[in-house]
Image (cartoon, rainbow, N blue to C red; front, side, top):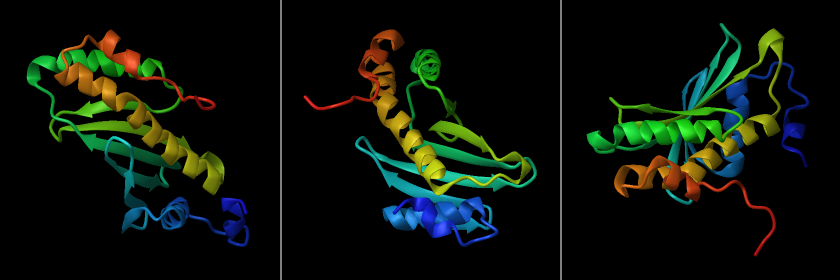
Length: 167
């Protein structure tokens, strides 16, 4: 059964309601912070990622933030920014940014649903999985850049694309 089949009978779908149902389906820890916001914890290979999705009716955008703590040495910040630029060049949707004051590496994405469009549960599920996938893919490169004294270019060598098939 497709995820969207659960929602076919509902006339007025709120994106955060869909996210809440997905969180229950995947058994992710979540907290419905407000009517328009939900926070979740999603376990990855490298760490647990904090994910927040918020709906803005004003600009009809579902915003996703996927973050993890990171407190690199001050002298490695230029290298981290360079590594983030390389990472952002390798992805098609979303982007990394570093929030220095909060010591967070953040993956950001906004899904525009202008004109009363409704996101399908499969779209939102993929959005969340792509966010976690991007963090999983580039986490080792960021670590090597900040604490392994590798150059950002060399650290990016560990950020492989998704593998197909099995060895």
